[in-house]
Length: 310
Image (cartoon, rainbow, N blue to C red):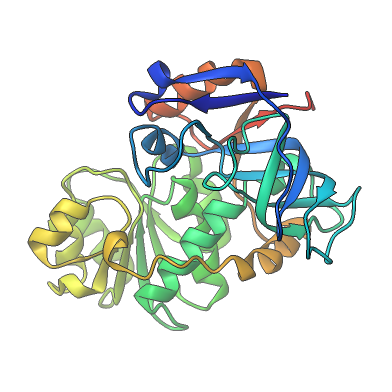
């Protein structure tokens, strides 16, 4: 089968290559799928540089959807032919989701009405956004600022927080501003005067801040928005500034992801009540074009590989 893998750590464009590899067998508690769609994320490129180092070679593509074609010992909740979505086992398998077939370590059945592409866009955005909102302590009635709501984590976090009854202010560019407003968030742009614009929109103290944007030096302003209390700010990106300023960061939080919420939000997505925007899809052999777009910082939504050619 075809798989995109790395044999050494370094810049993604230098170390990744598509190659022919043996089809892996699912071990106990694992399944193998024919991959119909694989979501790409910035973390894939960081893994290439040595984040969570492990046995090489290894693959990229951590979120997948597809058709079950083999089940490992002890698996009883799916059978061959089921359509599933979830996470690829990039640690225990020699390849991951960016391949014709993948070993999965967590999965749920795809609910009726949800297409493979949309299904593959959900796992990371849902689980990371959900876990960070719970870690931050967002509750009904809170006023929450999501900085970077144009990222997929931020876009998901806005929807989840609104569902939980929070009042949400979002910073975002033009691509998703109108969609965020239609969901019920108050939206403003990045850049000079952001603190004042957020304060005016809030009309009351901002209780909590979730920073999902790329590192930009904005953390001091986010702390100001949170009434000067750095512990009311959680960033998923600017770990260095958080350590200096006393803000919270993903690196210091519980890293256990709540995958059990994925089924709930997959059902919402099937019903049109939740979405992770898909910007473009690519054939597996076009993975370098997807890499270039992702690393440009202008993906404007989820990038999806389609090994099966859908």
